[in-house]
Image (cartoon, rainbow, N blue to C red):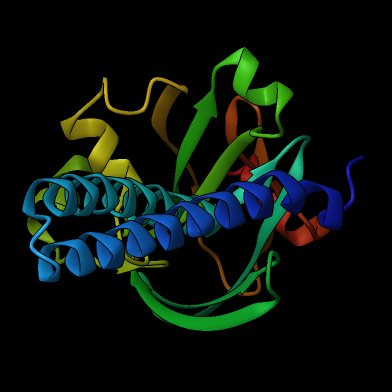
Length: 227
């Protein structure tokens, strides 16, 4: 198992590299301005343009790195969340969710018979894995579901955004420009859904094939058998 410090080294190295690239681009822009002030317009404009291009490239890559860093690193079957439920009324539950990556806890009100947890997954080309880019995931949405199609079509739905993308949205960038990031091998959504019940307790794991969930208590196992 790779420790958390080692897993951050490739990202930190790239971040520092492109920050230095931005600084070098800024230095070229300043030199270009100085040359323009000395009436060396052609030389100054060339340096300023090169500097602006390098700085823009650096800022774009930094934005991508920061966004990817918000995804959890996936190198093995990893526990990502625990959910417990309290029934408030028929088909109305309070869900208590612990996000295991940062031990953050949140409460949600869900309508329906089942809960569904969605995630976004990024997988990288083999040579990208060699420099430390294993698959990454981000929990995306929690929702309530109804068992029957009729209720799903007629009853109100409850959906919660779990983790908004900071800054540049790499997921949308790949969808709109699939050739822009050639290191990405695959990007897809994964979801798991199981029944809600009073005092039910589940643990969710991210695997290389997507999300899976397991009951934690014998009562939760019983609910699954009768689902």
